[in-house]
Image (cartoon, rainbow, N blue to C red; front, side, top):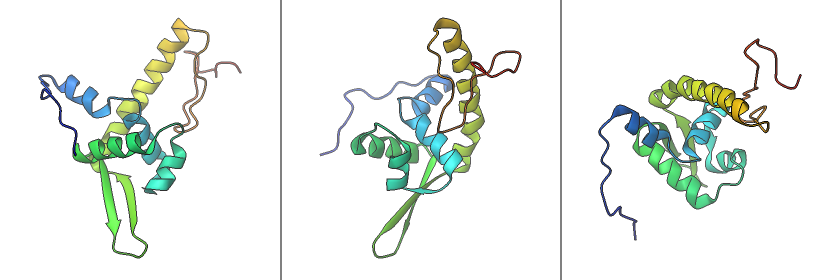
Length: 136
């Protein structure tokens, strides 16, 4: 049985739509992984995404496919093979997510001493406004 929302989404602003597309903990990470690793099978993608359950990863992929960000390509082979990759729309979001990552790293550094220094997925490295790596 498929889950149905009690109320339909009431999105009235492009920003709300964008936040809905990238919303949640895992969708932006999926886009990030696919942008750096390229086309991946489900098991490869899951291996890159630590601490995510199969149900959540599958649901997030379905939402990204429905919004046109991710392409699911199945091959007529035995055993069956399915690969996921970013669509042109998904690729166009990568610079936006990288900008958000840089902004969030800066803000996080301002409000806590426990700022993330480097993302293992996208290669983000926290740098000071001078361009010097933090902690270097």
